[in-house]
Image 1: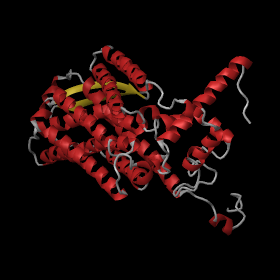
Image 2: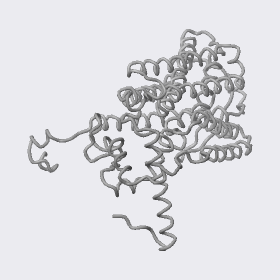
Image 3: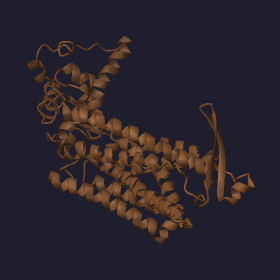
Length: 429
């Protein structure tokens, strides 16, 4: 078997260079994505189902407590679904519960948070230019923020504010925006964004674990004991389910935002995140209304206009801060020194940074051609967004970022002039 894999001996097999952390990260991300799709899919489906219900046509169904019904066709078959206003008169023999999708999504998400942001706190969580934290302090603060987020959310739901969904949504949105601002003052931008997502995701999973499932269990227990279930238990569970429905798109946004430096690295990133979350609310609300038979295109149009406005705002950075005669004359030798001292510890064929056995995303800066080929990426990550080096582990200065930016701009201008005169791209090599 070993020979079939191209490994000549046991000694060769023992010398295989396996990045266990990277493979574990892949497995967790994949599992998190699968569980999340299952959870979000069931959430969207049941909100649609609830919105699509019509009063039952059969008088016997109404007398039995059926509050709504809907017919559907899918996969070559017809389905007739009914919802009871409170509960059926007796417990069915086979009852399906929807909970493990939520639990596994949260557990895998927390595992990823620990693996990437807590185990790698020095690189991905801490920003010493904002707050000089030890790793254990940053981790404790992150966990405290997540727990506090749930306590605040649950307290709001149980307060008079929670009786009005619109008022609650406004207050919760403001509090999340404040949390996003506060976290970006303490953590690195990516660490801040992922903790906003963890606050929302924890509130969603805790809704299932602490309210929705327990209330459903009480209804089941009442039925088994021959008691009439409390209708309010179902109403409270439905409210938390509705909250989860509207929080789904914002939590997905926080998961992907860190991959876009024009967003996460912006000086007003917390505000951009909040604005995009508002756009997500408009989109979700449009579909919720549509499921009830009301089509209002003002919501998607407003969402599209809002997204364009956010993109334009995020793209404007004002006059270049890296201008000036000294920076404009930056030479290639100085740029190579900066890249060698600040970037190559990770982005090299043989990384020297602990925890890296291969260059991230396969990007290397060992040769000038590689630096030139990746110049737009370097400018976006290290100059504009200031996301690299992660946690500024190598101590890149603002002057060095300016030198890099001026040199890359100069390269781009030279390329443009050459293309204009030759009618083609500039050869490199």
